[in-house]
Amino acid sequence: MKFEFPHVEPPPGVSPADWNSSSWQFKNSLKNLEDYQRYYQLTDEERAGFSGQDQIFRVRTTPYYAQLGRGPYGALDPIRKILMPSRAELTPGVQHMLDPLGERKNNPVSRIIHRYPDRVLFLVTDFCSVYCRYCTRKHFTGQDQVFPNAEELETAFKYLQDHKEISEVILSGGDPLTLSNSQLSMVLRRIRKIEHIEIIRIGTRIPVVAPMRIDEELLEIIKRHHPIYMMTHFNHPRELTQLAAQALTRIVDRGIPTFNQMVLLNGVNNHANIVRALSRRLLYLRVKPYYMFQCDPSEGTDHFRTSIEDSENIQRQLWGSLSGLAMPNLSLDIPNGGGKVGLVPDFEQLRSPQRRIYRGWDGVVAEYVNPEPSTIETPVDFRQWE
Ligand SMILES: *Cc1c(COP(=O)(O)O)cnc(C)c1O
Ligand code: SF4
Image 1 (tube, rainbow, N blue to C red):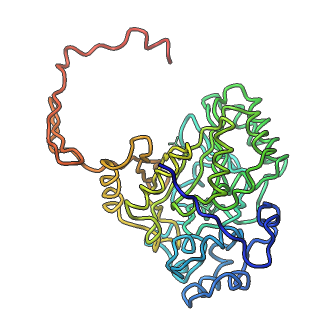
Image 2: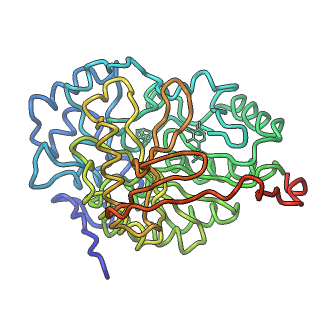
Image 3: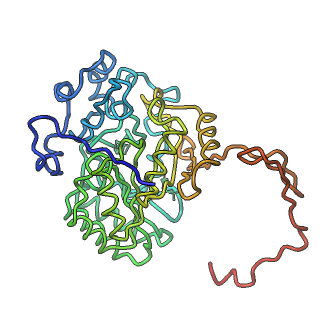
């Protein structure tokens, strides 16, 4: 089966050469009410979202992504909802959280979030080329801190060097691929000098909002520092345009395993059909759907949240109708920095030490009997693998 990936036409007066240039896209990004009005006929609700933008969360989008959000659905368009501020953002969340993941208390040195023993986030910039209105990291993103200064960088590298238990560094932000090639190259080179770091991940939304940034020069830099994993953030099948599909193909062709993390968003993608279409297209492009997150209770994002029951129902519906390869793990971040917890729809009918009874996705009920505890052995060589 072959999918059609839509082509995003430039607006009148923009040449294809400009449109396909990432520097043109970044230079001509939409940053205020006037810019947005050139692309959209704003509703009163949307217009009101701009009044408080400096206090709450700044606005920005690439022209490419703005153009993708223009469709027959007007203000109900899913892409438009992701990039467009609205009055609802000015309402504080029920849980009043600017930092729902409790990152500021797991922040041993500037730019490092160390929550799990073996892996850390390294926030290499606070800049994003699109500020997604549901962003969970509003305490940090879009505050003009951009690339760390020399002292912050050295402190962060020293922290990674000194903590031998860290085997994985996740470049995050902001969006690491908004850095210049030389900045990115320097960061990767320095991390690779630390012997105990095995894996580097790059968490980015660039393939979604500015796929033209994924060029040969960038991929050469990344490839030199393997093993590197790319974590993309597609939320809706329409984001998989021709350019996005080409960018993903180039990434994967360079031997960079690519995984997608999505967030369930009210009125944007909270339907099994949408998640299924997104996941199948990603899989076709050799991108593994990895996480499907419950939306965090970040300040001013209550209108984006869906109920946990709805999320579990979506996962239940996918279970029987989607290749296991394409199945994302439904997960929730426990507020206040409790870490992630996997949510699994409830298939269990009975649980006892001796046995479990399950009812499967299409209604088959059967029992699994545990072996006798006296038959359980520990593998003889387990100490060797510590
Ligand atoms: C999500 C997250 C990670 C990575 O978790 P994985 O389950 O390995 O993808 C690491 N650190 C922090 C603080 C996180 O929030
Ligand atoms: S790209 Fe990520 S960090 Fe940046 S605004 Fe969107 S969700 Fe937040």
